Amino acid sequence: MSLDLDVLRLARPEIAALAPYASARALAGHDGILLNANESPWPPWQDPGLDLNRYPEPQPAALKTRLAELYGVDPARLLITRGSDEGIDLLVRAFCRPGQDRVLVCPPCFGLYALSARIQGAEVIEAPLVESPDRWRLPVDLAARAAGCKLVFVCSPNNPTGDLLSEEEVGTLARAIDDQGLLVIDEAYVEFAPHASLMHLQRRHPNIVVLRTLSKAHALAGCRIGTVIADPEVIALLRRIIAPYPLPTPTVAAALAALSSEGIAGTQARIAQILEHKQALVQVLRSHPEIRQVWPGTANFVLVRASDGPRLVRDADLAGIRLRDQSAQHGLRDCVRITIGTPLENRRLTDFLQQWKP
Ligand SMILES: *Cc1c(COP(=O)(O)O)cnc(C)c1O
Image 1: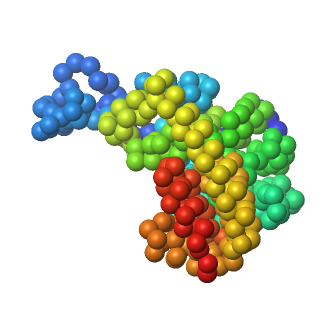
Image 2 (image 1 turned 180 degrees about the vertical axis):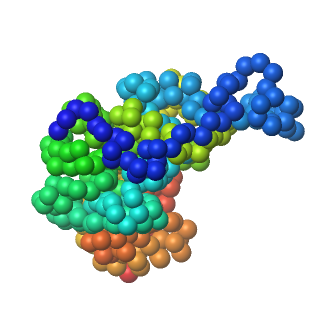
């Protein structure tokens, strides 16, 4: 494939033709006497010193620098979004023409890819993963099916199966899509599987887009911060349609604190603790007479198949423990996703499991 991605040809023509909305902050910055944005000149009651009367920076420079450093990429390749959820939605809206373009997903997977595509009016093509005792595999004909799709969504580690994709799998797929579409790799859980990021493949395959988030390992789901990492032309295109001020000031401040060196040390400690407790939980699950299959995966959750999955979820619920029923997903009859909690929460779960009989 050519190393130059013709982003404007891939995009919806009306988006390619759009001039970005020029917000007051984007036009004039933060200095001087600010009489250009109809803001209050005074802070609100009990302002925590964050200048909450002012609109935030559209793409906060300090956070962008920090994320670029964290992910090891050029800041021009980043777009900070309101969670990865918004990144997914922006990609679908920028590239998929209603009634014309196709989006490929590999269920069981995160449901938002297909939902965003359907809201946009794009056709959703499903190429289901293939079950095996140790992992779920991409279907062998995936590359053939991906050809001609505008967006192909894969996830590594995958939610809810926990499996990682290999460089070979992703490289083959990116080549098959070629210059007809983008391969989106959602790496929401990759911090739990060190050195497993596939981001470096972007150098060879400019049609790869990577999604990262602070919601999982970085413990900031309430902040809503995700990052789209892609060719600068893709980023420039998405900036034409993103909301003018997607990132609330308190959210950005909290994220910067969590990404300080102390914050990152804390994240590393939590990851280590979660992985250790996951091992213990997997042992309990593997020796349980009513658990038929355990897929430990490489993230902060495990997927199991029980003798009666919906019943497991209901009984756990009665014991005050919320698990995620996956039985409505493709191929996941009787399957339940269990997130690793604190040591105390894991102990409560283990106690419940040890007496559970459907
Ligand atoms: C949790 C999750 C996300 C959502 O991330 P946000 O940044 O919180 O929007 C994205 N993809 C997958 C696969 C997830 O499980």
